[in-house]
Image (cartoon, rainbow, N blue to C red; front, top):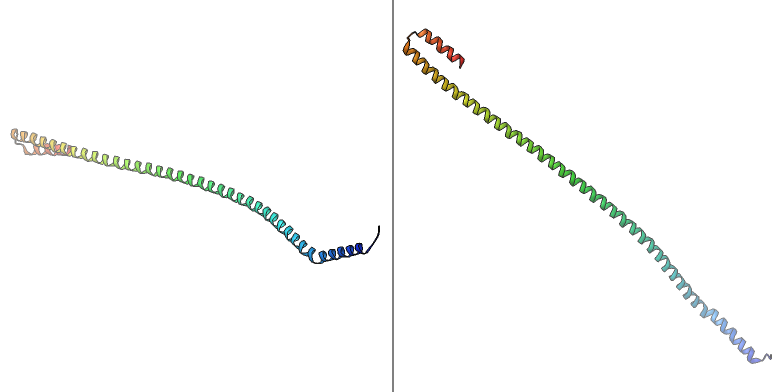
Length: 156
């Protein structure tokens, strides 16, 4: 192999090309590659964070759903309790109304019995007076008749 000026010129040109590339071309290329690697790493990290955030959001949604169901069950239980309370109150009111109606009926019956007794007393008094008149017409003994009338009045 012959080393001549062409080979030395080519080697020198190649060395200058390598130096030029290393000095001016290589740094922007490396910075672009490093920037791209950094963006890819950030994208992967963001994807991981998104997955974690999604998992946390799903857990929060599940928790909120459990709480909502628990609250709904609690509201349903309160509604049942209130319904039972209303039913018990209505029963108590019905019993009180029935007792009031019974008391009114008993009072009316007692009043009717008293009226009947008074009417019976009046009729008995009228009969007693009629009997006394008949006795007085037959006999004129006032003292005996008075005692008899007093006895009848006491019995009535």
